[in-house]
Amino acid sequence: MGKNNTKFLMQFAALAMVLTVAIMVKEATSMSICNMDTNDMQKCRPAITGNNPPPPVNECCVVVRGANLECLCRFKFYLPILRIDPSKVAALVAKCGVTTVPRACQV
Image (cartoon, rainbow, N blue to C red):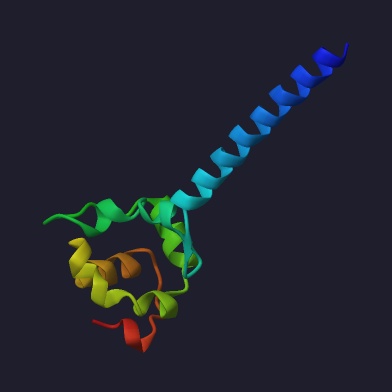
């Protein structure tokens, strides 16, 4: 019976390690920036890229309305590096019904 307990403990330890790694990978691929999850930001990408971006989807607007815009404005100078036009971001914010835009965010 000692061998069975040892085998069970080894299997349990292996499962615990796999779950820990899975959680760490999930955490590493998703960060929170200015009250926005980086994975959630992708919901808005279609609405701010390309020549004629489509209107934002509701899920995008939920993310935008929950964001700390004053915090995000500190990053606006990096948008062109990501091939994102800051004026399209300003339009996205307006299309999502956000009317109070911090002065630092205005393009």
